[in-house]
Image 1 (spheres, rainbow, N blue to C red):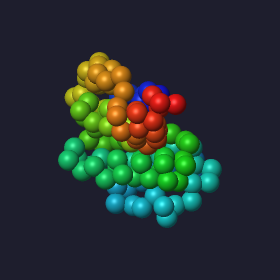
Image 2: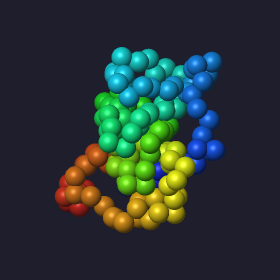
Image 3: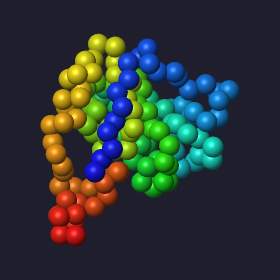
Image 4: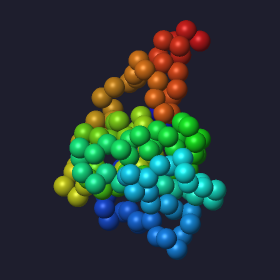
Length: 132
């Protein structure tokens, strides 16, 4: 079962601070594989605009390939249309753009009860889970 994504408003979000090594802000063109994640409890991934999806790849790398278990947070131009894919890519939380409705985002997350293919959190495809 995919864990629920926590939805935040811009006012709820405290940005990464270089003075706090436990929270890492990662540029969307950075390669997470080159970072030391020791002591890091949260990674903020940035969407500079809706059409730039590089943070999805970064989240997937952090969660699946690097085994990061801390919080992965989406920041920037985050729209309700993206939250379901963010959840499946490994994000734990998303800071919705100020003009986005959290109620609409929650409904978006409840639209599907499962997926056929695996993702960053639920690795096995649905048929493999059903046959087990």
